[in-house]
Amino acid sequence: MIVVVDMNIMFSAVIAPDSRIGQIIAHPSSPFNKVSCYYAFIELFKHQPKIIKYSKRSQPEVLDILYSALRHFEFFNETLIEQQHWIEAERLTVGVDAFDINYVALTLQTDCWLWTGDKKLIYQLTALGFNRIITTCELFEKLI
Image 1 (cartoon, one colour):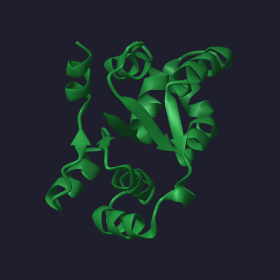
Image 2 (cartoon, helix red, strand yellow; image 1 turned 180 degrees about the horizontal axis):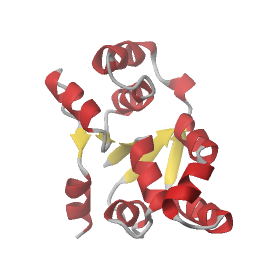
Image 3 (cartoon, one colour; image 1 turned 180 degrees about the vertical axis):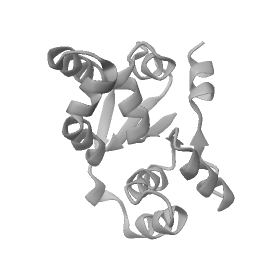
Image 4 (cartoon, one colour; image 1 turned 45 degrees about the vertical axis):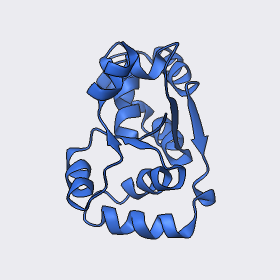
């Protein structure tokens, strides 16, 4: 199983690496591949001061956690996503955070599952018939 991981999930995993989300990301025998957009990689480093603040950890600790978390991902170049997926993702994400389009387009491109904790996005996608969303709870159950 392939799972597209959005920025909210990645941010949570780095802030609280011992949380359920962190455990899913770092699980040594995970039954699924985790992918995300280049955009997420850049955003994690851009928001490093915020991660340090919320995690209450030093910069060296946060960098170690970032390294540990990021090595579990494959990052996908958004320029390789086909135009029809961008068009559909735009339709599905209109009215929510503009950056969510990347993750939805990547989910459509790879025909996999979107892992997000963004309730507004989940509600919007579900209302429009997009059913390729997987929850933290569902993923955690697959680890057991």
